[in-house]
Amino acid sequence: MSEFRSASTPGVLLEIAVGLARDAAATARRLRAEAIFDVETKSTATDVVTAADKAVERQVIEALRELRPGDGVLGEEYGDAAGEGSVRWILDPIDGTVNYLYGLPQYAVSLAAEAGGEIVAGIVINAATGDEWTATRGGGAYRGDRRLKVTGPAELSQALVGTGFGYDARRRAHQGRVLAGLITRVRDIRRFGAAALDLCAVAEGTLDAYYEKGLNPWDHAAGGLIAREAGAVVAGLQGARPGLDMVVAAPPAIFNDLHDLLVGLDAAGGA
Ligand code: LIP
Image: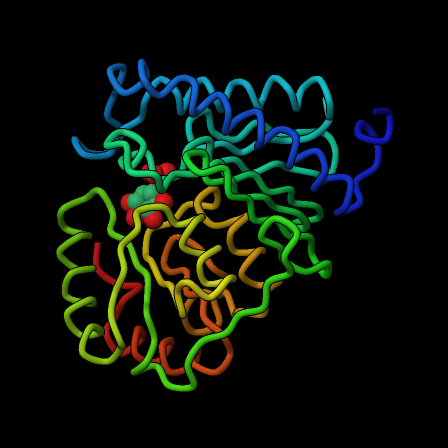
């Protein structure tokens, strides 16, 4: 256990993340029956947070305080608590909260460890199904214990592309225009509703690519590392890092074509 307190190798940080995320997923499952009746709204009337989102985040923060008192934590519900050390944890307690509310089995706990400004370890657990995706920087990506390698078509026109929409109507209007310009240039679109799981789908090839505007670090930190370690390019547009303006993930074979199409459609623009 003392190693957990002090060592900050990607392997040790992943081991910590796996333990905390599994407990968090179990809590999310256990609380759902009541939590869906204890709901508040955030940025808009459709941007919801349940009592479980908060309880799960508090649980992980308290466990980290025990295990790693010097580390920082950035979480979706309680924000950024700086630490003294070089490690910061980035947490989405329930990614896909609307799916959680509706009982659609597509919501996840996403926990990443950042060291020296780089994501070095990450786990995404589908809390409804128990499926787990993990990665360490330079150590590869896994679904369970199966090593992942991105596949995908040679042509964008054959790609199954995932995306998502924000909670603000003006942003959704812009995202709808972008989608209208893109939908004739790809095989088809999927909207699953949880960015962390969409990025894991790119890593394992159940999606060929994914893009979304408006994601916060907790939505893509762990999933982005998993997709990258499986061989995908994960970036923003025009040389930017993945961030609020845009996150795009795709195998090298189709990344540039998707990137250029999104730039042409001003996908990072709008509200
Ligand atoms: C969700 C993202 C999803 C996006 C939703 C929302 P949340 O995160 O995972 O990709 O389309 O608008 O941001 O709010 O469930 O944590």
